[in-house]
Length: 187
Image 1 (spheres, rainbow, N blue to C red):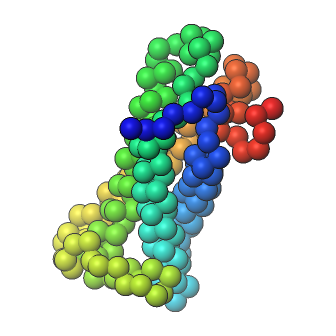
Image 2 (cartoon, rainbow, N blue to C red):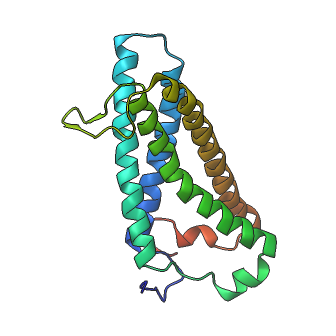
């Protein structure tokens, strides 16, 4: 049974997971976009390895975050805030969060599958070779490659939507919603 919190703020652990994953994902998306535009070179190969390492690390962080989320219920919206929020915003809030969680897993797993199918093993931090997600198969690699990009761009779009909604609550509604997940004090 999930623990619940009596506070209107998220726990320090949930806040830490949120911000570390947020910064990591944004950084990895920007880096992935950058590296795919580079000409073939030793540097590009190195960057692809770094991208894989970071992707696997964020996948592990996503698993830990999901486990935390399953065992620790988030705080309910304050009643006044929930009453003021239109139903469509509440549905969008939940839908975007669910899609974000799906893509936290889909993007790195598609990347891992693509790398395996292309015959390029992932050696995490240059130390631990991960098992192939699928068998090497050039045709499968070509079929998976665009899905990794589509999922990554979808994740980027949802992150932008999530940020826009948070800023709307902070700057237009001024309802204090952002304080629930902001690091530091509740004030």
